[in-house]
Image (cartoon, rainbow, N blue to C red; front, side, top):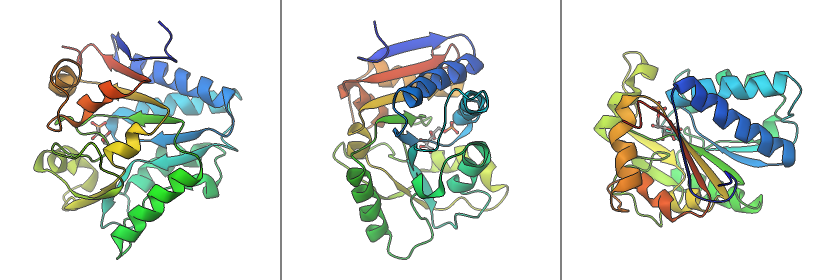
Length: 244
Ligand code: F6R
């Protein structure tokens, strides 16, 4: 079975191997298509993955000079310079470590009054560059992808969403005692499904229930990630804890 062509499910033993395998696939895609449009995620799962991807850059295997990126989501409201913002996370783990051009980094601005206009701008920009070639996803303990919480419509596009209490609890560590914002701006399910290829990564036993429901249960709005089974080119890479 080719990892390039269909629904692929890979379970490896350790979290580190999830990061290595995902980075290898992404690096090969960048190598093949220097101007690739990547959809990126943040969060704990992504830390090792970006570390591995940076290694490919440092070894000279890939360059980010023509790569364009669109991150999935950002808290709302938040200033991009706030240490807890997803933009700060990306600077720290990837953007500041590779030769990506600022003009090629696309982010939802969590510091605008008119969030509807901001979401429209983002959705249009994705279309303008010809769509996302390769989208990286994590998964929430409740099965969310991006910040599309359970109940999100499969036809949703980039919009403001209210964060569920489980998501706020899971992400509280980034806010160190401060309140997690009530809202976020996120690409929608339809936006995500419009990507040519999708790779979802999951590590740790906290994700086991969400992964089981994603792979085995009904395709339902209650488990947003389950909709990925309708996409023609998805790879799901997990460690054995998330596969329990
Ligand atoms: C973040 C995002 C979220 C995370 C998910 C898992 O940009 O889109 O869907 O991927 O919440 O987060 P971690 O990896 O912190 O468990």
